[in-house]
Image 1 (cartoon, one colour):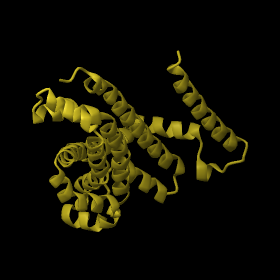
Image 2: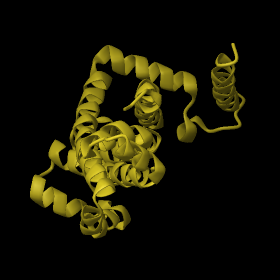
Image 3: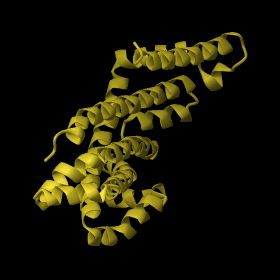
Image 4: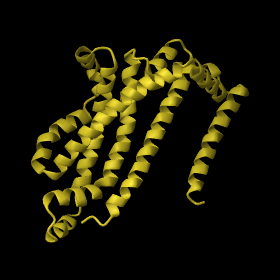
Length: 254
């Protein structure tokens, strides 16, 4: 009962916002040309599903997001674990990590187009570069925040190097790694949408750009709503995955 209360309060506050938005339009306080309204957006979503246009756009964006974010997870975890476990690797990777983290990557968009062309590969590359850094940095931070006494205790009990890594260091780093993955989800989706605003890939970002150019606020917000829903689903899925790994983190280990 207690666990359902936050969900109920969140749903209630969201419903109140939608109600106030709809009421503001119907009472003439808001101009629907600029703000649209929830019922119109719902009709646009239903029409897009019936015509198949929405499904095609979602499929393109999800495929690009999955490829970019999946590659970011694989590379980010590998680099983060290596840099967190071996100091020389961290020193070697540090300049590149902070360059990618600090540089305005969208400014390199013309280069991506020149190298990869106007298509899905450019979208995937931008999504990957935007999301790989927080995963790598958080993984390193998780490995570095490990209590040295835990490693010392494991070593005193005869644990070998790979046992200390897989049974002590990685389980203890799960919260930081999960936080990095959640940050990466948002950045990966941002990369997909930003790239699709310029790349005619047929995804949700392209739909937003097309409808914005035609001043079709309702259709633009409908695509935006779908992107938000995808982000929420991915974030909640990662939270559930973290809960599954909590037994590995708190288990008997050695």
